[in-house]
Length: 168
Image 1 (spheres, rainbow, N blue to C red):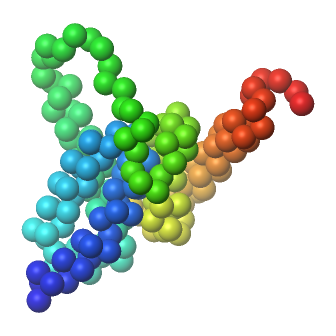
Image 2: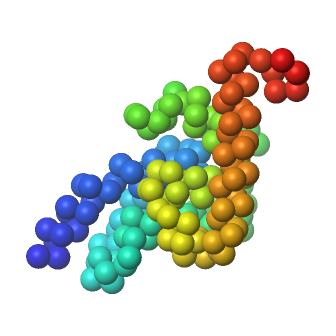
């Protein structure tokens, strides 16, 4: 029974969780790796995760926590790269997620992207988002408000074809 429930959850949740993590991290390959790791951990703890009030939020939060762990581990490694930053190609965005929108979302601070991912892509309420991120409800509201204002400014300017700093 455990296997069947998890399969159904995985099928119903994978794409939406991937989009939410992609919005938050901005890199498709990294998002796929993080979501795969989160679902692996969910499978290992399925009895606990299945009783969670928002299992999709658990997946996204676990993926984002995994990113932090990987970042900390990588930060301690000695790099042999050529110093060229790895810039994700917006054309490789998730189907159903506009590359232009993804590019604008990447400009938001990390916490604002996380709030957008949970509130908009997973459709969680403020309380569930606050619990998933481990922050106060008022902080969620503030980050959401700032993110929406920044997105509105960027997207309206792009849509109008007018630069952000000129009066129309």
